[in-house]
Image (cartoon, rainbow, N blue to C red; front, side, top):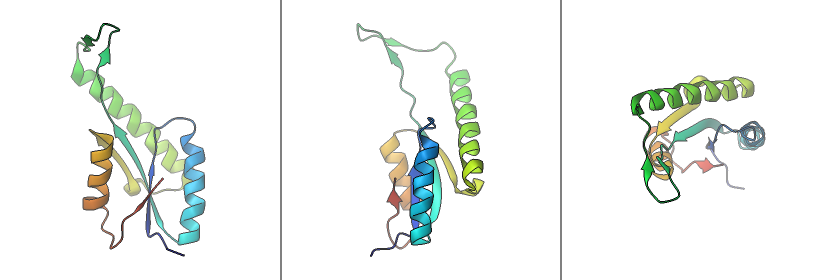
Length: 116
């Protein structure tokens, strides 16, 4: 059986994230793997039905609020799962690009990590 050394648990910070983390912890124990929690903030402007974009007046305030709330929720999930804060990653940008970048650059493993 192939052994995973590092498991990236991609969470959306919803109520279901805790259940996903529990499953990942079980898999991590089987493989004796490191677990990391990852959340990507993908800011997408709202669209009206006519296709026009609705941009918030203060983008900096919206961004700050999203980051602050996401950090808090990610820390809560990590604490509830005994995952070290250093193994939590809050990223901003395109989800796919940011997750691939994290796995290739920041997670130094000889093998590719498992994504959950």
